[in-house]
Length: 288
Ligand code: R5P
Image (cartoon, rainbow, N blue to C red; front, side, top):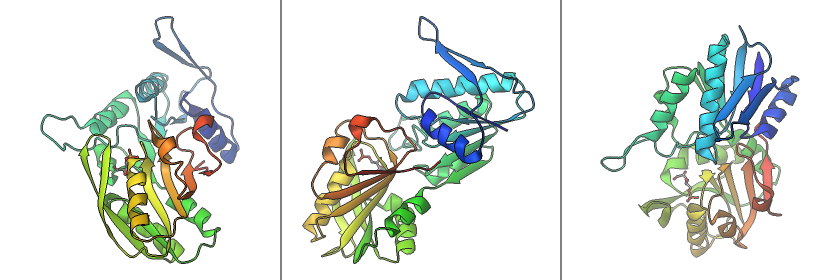
């Protein structure tokens, strides 16, 4: 087998290679003067079981196109099998039509990956489990819930409740709650418009409790901001732990997450974290 990294997240690919006791496969990725991507695998991959690690995080279009070109090169070089390790699946939130005349971009991406050469997908905490069915090839759907729960368990927090900002995350939050032997609470979230989250209600008792909020991803931080407002208004202990698998951290996210009620922000490294987005409250758990 051989493991290759695109340019999106070489640190994670290197950590995975170290855990496997192998070197990353050599390849050249450059750009032509007009910005077209050029890729060349430096050694033969004929007959190789090739794994390509590339989260399709921002800049999503560039990282996605680079991944597709990597797959095409492997296929044309007669790799035996091509597995795509997608720690983060960009466009996963467009997995269904919410309104007429919208695309289902998550399915389009699945089609593109298979057309380019993918034989297997290794994904992590997909925004919707049903995305697995967008592929007619095997999908290994991994989760960071175990690693996040194990980390939280080391904190020996007492009188805790695990909180989901919306009903979509309840299954995962229930797993954390069951590992930490504590109850759960769920927010009622709706989106009146693109990128706007409102939480209008909460099911579960949080009064006087230490809350651990989990979401699959934090994009603009709007959902987290809203659920924290709701928890504080419901009498929760104002030292709140916030955890997510995918720290997208777009737009106002860092500023929103700097609010004093957040005691710790626990994220994973499915997406590279730039230094200006890291604060003294940030803990990064590696999924490598
Ligand atoms: C559901 O919409 C997702 O699970 C996340 O809650 C959402 O993507 C977070 O986005 P934002 O941080 O912009 O509220």
